[in-house]
Image 1 (cartoon, helix red, strand yellow):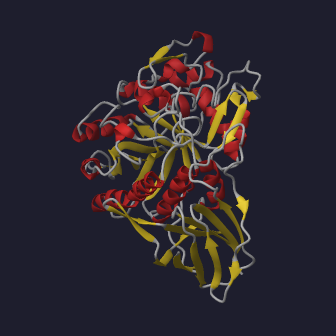
Image 2 (tube, helix red, strand yellow):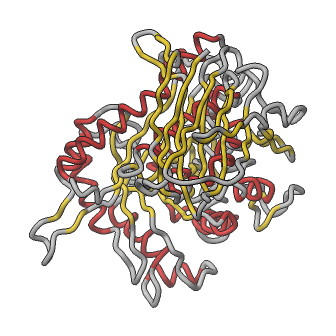
Length: 505
């Protein structure tokens, strides 16, 4: 059994944990949009303007901060003007990336912005730099955000929207090293500068331009982009072409060609997954270190706008739809990621899990009128108090909380903490598949009120929720907290995620 002491100085606040680290991602892929977010106005499933309301209600409970759309790889073959105007007059296209299916463009710009308004989330639009043009992207920004009178403003008004929308987050391409154009880093950096130049700030709408960055640990790609970050001599004062730089990282248990089942796996597969998940700490550190060389003031945000587990699709489903189940293992990957994100809050500004509905590590699974909340959903809900809170450093001293996994070391205890409005939230994960852990929370620099806790676990790592059994994995009250002279003590069961909430006295 592992023993650990977590020292937390309640009176020493660290960087703010951006709420946008809890962002989401919705691509025209499989049943994420159609059947997930969008059912159409004639559907018997309750909807508002075609947008599925049970999905909206579930996501609003997470305080969803932003939603990335329309891709992903789809973004770089999407031409936004095909998705405006009367739906029955919109041209169709083939979604060549995901299943080679026909896309009717019924869910377009106006529908996405209506969805964001229902969710109370900020839109994050990924622009087409792969098969599109500078003019096309520039006009999309104008269509969305410009007031007054202009060709795109008149077009927007003709389509029923008088006032401009507020759009902050704007992606300049997606995975330009791969599906977004198979570019070299140098060429992608030049295009990013060009496209960003013509993505204008209209009125008081200020864009946060996010350049398409690296995959995994490709630090050279990050360096190439950072070398091109600033425009000197083009104005009276230098400016950054982009305010954010993205990268992508997916958690796998094995090689890309044999990812394995989402629900049928053994303990060795589980530990390999957890070791893969913890690699994100080293990768964020690497990208941050490169960025520090060119941006020591950390004015440019690092954006992990695709992350999550990736398994083989469920048997009998379209391989191009990326539909996978979601178990307790996935939830523990999410909890571990968030602990790492919180530690990097001084540079990491946004993260978007892939994807929100029915694709990869989803929050929600739908089938007809049925809706299931996944174990990962519950981690987001239990952790939502960290959004925009001040991080608190957690100093872990452990015995027996590490194991060798191949050529990697896995820390089987993970933790993070924050404080906001006089409330402290502590997140803890025991990644050991079989053994509990004795944990002491040594809380210094302030007194605490009564503490409450919730736990997410199940009898087996493979446990997951279905329409027939939607609560197999769900949060439950945890009554194992014990007050000590130093703070709190508890026994953390194996393969469990737990949050502790208390007030500052």
